[in-house]
Image (cartoon, rainbow over all chains, first blue to last red; front, side, top):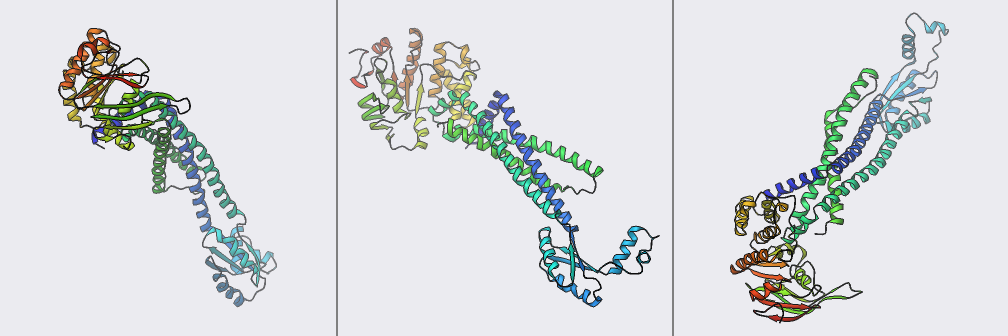
Length: 295
Length: 228
C-alpha cells in the first residue's frame, strides 16, 4: 500500500468519525467504560495479590511444644521443622523469652513471674515462616502431627480468605468485562455499519473503478481502531487520575494497608488496556465488514 | 476485446427469469457499439457481465484475452481498471467537489498524488469543465454532471468504456455534446459500448448496432440504425 493511500484512508476514517459524531462518542464511551472496569478490576486483583504477598512475608506459624520439655529436646526440634517442605525459616523462642516479651507488653512495672507464683506457664515456641502463603496450612498440619508438639497456631482462615477473595475478584471481573466488551464490540460494529451504509455509493464506485478490497476496507478498519484507541485512552487517563488520588488518600488515612505503587506495573497495565481497546475496535469493524461490506 | 460465447443468464433458479439467452458477441478493439432494445431486453445484464459484476449461468466471456469465469475474486479489480463506466444517473459524490470526484477514481487505484494533481485538471479540461473544479455537483447542470462522470471514467485511461444510457436524462443538445466527447475518446482508440434508447443518436452516428429483445440478439449490424 502506498503512503498516499494510507493518508487517504486516515482522511476518510477521520471524516466519517466526524460525520457520525454521536455514534462515535457512544462507542468511545462504551469502550472507555468497559476498559475502565477492566482496569479497575485488574488493579484490585494486583493489589490483593500484593496484599497477599505482604501478608505472606509476615505470616508465621506458631508451634507450641509440650510443657516441661527438656531444653535439648526442644532445641533438637529445629531440624525437624526445617526439614518440612515449604519451610523458609524457623526461630526458636524459649519460654523465658516468651515471658519477657509478655512482660514488655504489659509494661515494666509488672512482674508477671512473681504474680504467677514463680512458675512460667508458657511453653517453648517455634516461629516458622513459609515460602509462600499457600503452603502455610500444609506446614501447620504436618507440624501438628509431630511428636512433642502441643498445638499449632497461624492466621487461620486469613490466608484462605484472601486467596479466595482474589480468585473471586478475578472470576467476577472477567465475567463483567466479557459482557461489557461484547457490548463495546457490538456498538463499534453498529457504528462501522452506519459508516458503510453512509458510504455505499462511494464503495460502489470504488469497486467499479477497480479499487482493491483492502483499499476499500482499510478506512473502516482504521475507524474502528481509532474508536477503540480513543476509548482506551479515556479509560487510562481516568484510571491514572483516580488511582493516584486513591493511593494518596490511603497513604494518609489507612497507612497500614499496603498499596501497589510500582509505576512499571501501572504502565504495563495502561499499555495492555490501549492494546485491548484497539483490538476491540478492530474486531468490531471486522464483524461489520464481514456482514455488511460485500467486496 | 470482448468475446461472449453462448452466454446465458438466468436470475432466480426457481422462477427462472431468463435475462440473456445464448448470446454470441465479439467486440473488437477500438469499436463503437450501440446496444439497443426495449427495457428488460437484457442490456444492463449484458454490461454487468462484462465487468464481472455477475457471472453468467452458462457460457464463456473473455475480456482482453482473460476468461472472466476463471478469474479469481482478487483479480477483478485489475479487470475493472481496464474499463471505465458511465451511468445514466452520473453517480457523483454530492459532498465532494468536481476535482475530488475525479481524483477519487485515481486515489482508489492508488495512483501517486503527484500524478493525480497533474492528470485530473487535464481530463477536466478535455470535457470542458476545468473552470468548475472546485464546484459541487449540485451546482452543475445535468450535462455538466455527465461530463464529470465521463472524466472520472477516462481518468485512469481505460481500454474500454461502457456507458449505460449516458444520455438518458439529458436534453437533445446536451446529449450531442456528450456523444461528441465519447466519439473523441473513441478516436484515440478506446473501445466504447453504449446501451441506449436514443433513436436519433443511433440513426445519425451510423455505428455498429446490437439489438436485444427478450434476452436474445435479434440484430447485429455494422453502420446500423435504431430500427432495422
